[in-house]
Each structure stands twice: as C-alpha cells, then as structure tokens.
Image (cartoon, rainbow, N blue to C red; front, side, top):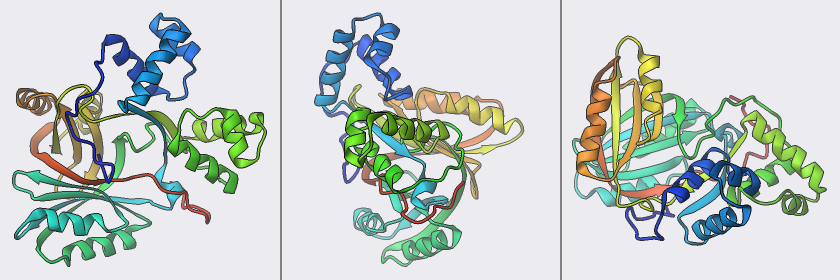
Length: 316
C-alpha cells in the first residue's frame, strides 16, 4: 500500500501452510539463513530456498530493513482524524504531499480521513498539524499523540538502545531498507568494507534495535482483506489489555496515545463477520471500556522509508 499502494485482494500465487510458516519465520527474522529456516520447517535447504524465491519474485513478500525513526531525526508521532467538506480524495492528496505525512487513508464512518505524522519534534509536529488544518476543505482536525508504537511493520519491534552511527552505517541502513536479505559480502562491497567488517556493523545495528529486518507481506496476498482502524478507551489493567490486543494475529498496528483515546490500531480480517468478531473480542478484553472503529477505503499514501539523518540524530 502506498505511493506503492497495493490492492487488498490482488490475486497471487497459491499459498499453502508451509508457505505461511515460512512467511512467519522471515517476519520474525528476515535474515534467517536457509539452513535455519529448513530446520524449523523440516524441509531441505533447496526446497526452502525455492519457496522463498517464488514468494519474493511473485511480489507476495518483500524482505526489508525497518529503521528506527529517531535515526531519521524523527521523534514526534501523531494520528490525525480529519473531517472535510466536499470530496475527501482531493484533501487526502494535499495531506499526502506533506513530508511529515507518512500514512494517509480515506475511511468510512464518522471520520473522512486519517493520517499518521512523524516529525522531528513537537514543534515541527504542531506546525504540520496547522498546515493540515489550513488545507481548503478541512473542517476539523483531531490530533492524538503517540506515546509508544508497540506493533507496526514499519517500526522495529524490539527495544531500542540508542547508538551512534556514522556515514558507513547510514549507507548500510539505506541498502537494508531496499534489500533486507542482502549478503554481507554484497553489503561490504556497497560501502567499501570487507565481508567480516560489514557483518560486524550490521549485527551491531540489529542488536541495538536501530534496524529490524523482517517480511512485508503484500496486502491481500493471503486472500481478500478488510482493513479497520480502531481506538480504545482503557480503564484499570490498561497495560495487560494493550499487551493482550497486541498479540492478536489480526492486529497489524498498535500504539498507545494521549488525547481522545488511550490506544489506536489497525486490524485486518478476511470478511465483515471476521471484523465483527475481532471487535467483539477486543470489547471483551478486561480493561477495555469502549471501542470505536472505521473502515479504510483507500490508502492514498504509506511511505516510511527514508535516509537516516546525516547529522547526529536525536536518540530515543
């Protein structure tokens, strides 16, 4: 989905249970060796490699490096709910043109558009919100500030230990964003290092949480999908409730927040009944007071990759 927007439900190669297990393996560790994957799946190395090549060449999956946004100099994140007067797509295109707008979608329900902003700091974030509010056709902008992003394909899943990076590290990160499974020898050649030196640097970046290499599965590759956004009001046991929801397989995105809600997320199901059952399950979680939801109709922009800041980054 993005500028890269991919259609939910685009037909692709037939996926079987072994493919699903393979995809789960490379979601956890996109640089897992074929030997490790073959042991986990009980297949030969050649069989695993053939399946992986088929999935990659068909576009079902991409193996990419996800870099912590603070290394881009981005430390302030927010979700915007936008109400418009007149056609929504024209407004969505104007918001998508803003550099800090990383995700923009036209939705159904009480909202018209939603967007995610990632900015250098709170002042820059506030300035971008004002720019959105000034776009012709925008009636109202409701802003929710993220306190933590807990689950997202474009955010490293583990803890981040702030680490200094130099120009060589930046070039390695840029290349890993394009090809997360690039061989250490190839990475070394790109940046002018030996294979062992490239390996040492990449492992340091991975272990610090500066980058996570995982699988990005094409939306709809596993069948037609319905994508819903949701926001939560939480009571006692909020941390346990959020962790319980984060572990749900339907949840693609989850962040804690301050503002009109305590957490906000995105889930994917393969039917309207599946969406209903997911929302009912969330409503039943101990600590959840209320759930509001909306349906994504068209993702206008989803673009998170960029070059790490060349100046000393603000570390989180």
